[in-house]
Image (tube, rainbow, N blue to C red):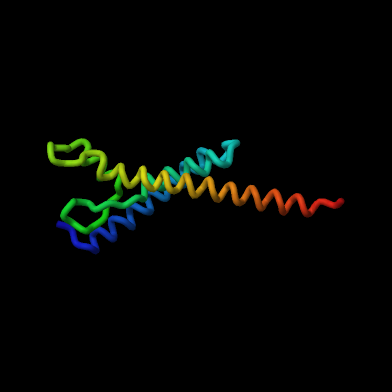
Length: 122
């Protein structure tokens, strides 16, 4: 079994690699015309890569939910939850993030419109 320090260094290496993937994704979609779509793609990709879940059901150490879901889905036996153990937190965080993003966009649109409307001369 791995120690807590091994998991920490694993997360450091994984975070650097996932950040490089997100940067590459940003380079690919930076010229996309619709800003909201671009933001949502990046947010959902970050959530998919960085959502943690316990590595094993009886172990408190965390692992990326995407890989836990993939591993347990492929190696599922009768008693395991399969893809659900890692996919449920990803879907929950995705739903909350999309909702909060839409609220933030609405607030930014509302205050941006008011600010630009008051700066025009009569």
